[in-house]
Length: 115
Length: 112
Image (tube, rainbow over all chains, first blue to last red; front, side, top):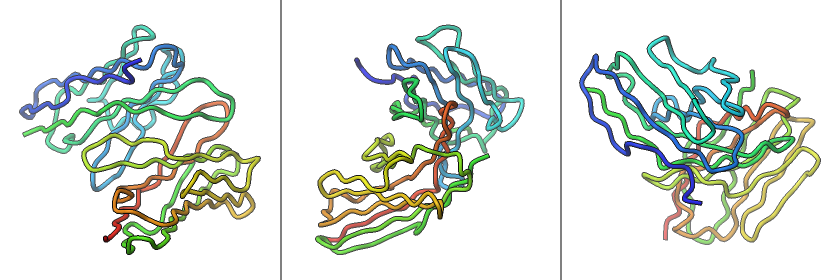
């Protein structure tokens, strides 16, 4: 397996534009997570899915952020409209459903810069 | 929800010395405690993990200890090498929801 795949790897956009980040989890994994990483706030969990269903989106900063998982092999994180403070590295991760927790495999991340 | 605190935020050691990073968690129901290493510009990767039914686990130069009563766990790296330089994150996860919360990270620098 190629591991978790994210695209694009880098995104530079202007304030007010819509941004869509994409993730393909490892085949067979039941959980998918979206994280945001900044120097100030560290690694923050935004939302996670179990079997394509959103379980906890309490980490989503505000209504400008939305995430979908239409099938087991694809998820998107959308920011509309984007703002400079959204600049960060966004990681997608996936894991198996193992009682008591299991390793999360991270994608390479998308570095987002909002000008 | 779970709150994970990690100390120190930065740690500098001489090559060959040991390094210890400590974390505390708030939710007594948490039972899975992984440690991730993130090199500059790379993704976090698991280096070791421990579950609540185990007090200590070792993998070559890396060991993790867990004190469930005190709700803290620690990462120990012995005989440090320059390639150990990275940011290390602890995390805690509750059962049945895979909701993992990360500590703020420790930037470890190993000086040759």
